[in-house]
Amino acid sequence: MSKLYVVGTPIGNLSDMSPRALEILGSVDFIAAEDTRVTMKLLTHFDIHKPLVSYYEHNLREKGEYIVDRISAGETCAIVTDAGMPCISDPGEDLVRLCAERGIEVNVVPSPTAAMSALAISGLSTSRFSFEGFLSVTKKQRNAHLDEIKDYKRTLIFYEAPHKLKNTLDDLLSALGDRRISLCRELTKIHEEVLRGKISEMINYYSDKTPKGEYVLVVEGALEEEEKSGDIEDAVKFAKKEIENGKKASEACKEAAKKFGFSKSEIYTIIIEEK
Image (cartoon, rainbow, N blue to C red; front, side, top):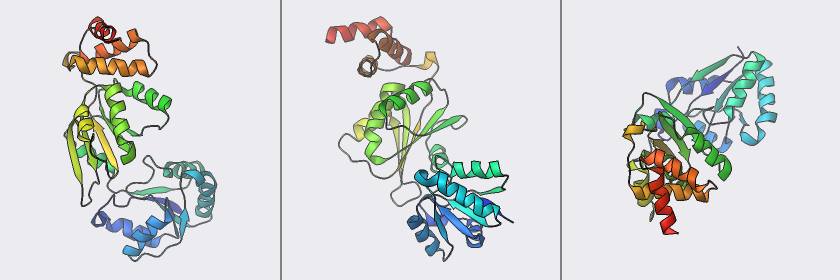
């Protein structure tokens, strides 16, 4: 029967490949892959030989219709991403939408996901969380995103590439304050590492180190007003950063006061004296 299978693959350790995933990948007519070269290595390792169709962000409209047409004609397809679950912060979500619009059945074969794996070992609250994916590389959109979620009480989860990590940590400190954070890299791989501490501590840690590997950042949610605390220096630094980003001094100091528990006038006075 024609259908689409959303098939998860390991995020690093090939031993995490499920028997059902192997069964499905070996039985479908063709496989849609984010990067056919990466998927070919995985299939070769498990001695699976199936036709591959390249399906990624920049060709998803054209190839999506092509894939759906083939499924509608009676074929079965499995969609995979380079690692982990397809359709999570991934162009595969568009293919699932197309199938839903055409009335095509979609089945899921789950696998480990970096976001949930990192959350589980973060040491932060797991009762409520918000997956925020990758922050925009455009400064205006990035600031707007962080401004939107700064008051969320739930734990926040981000993905980040190594070459952007330092700037992202700076932006998180500026927008969210000095919260607890867990940095998880190379999950399930040989060099798996989890760093826990305050955002400022992570900034200091990477001041003379080069980030390596793909990261999942798990950040503490906003604390209740009476729980908020911090150094006046952090509050002033936060306010200055907001001013640099275009906010009026009064508005920046108000935001800093709210986040760090100091009075607006106290922060404003220090900023004026330092000019």
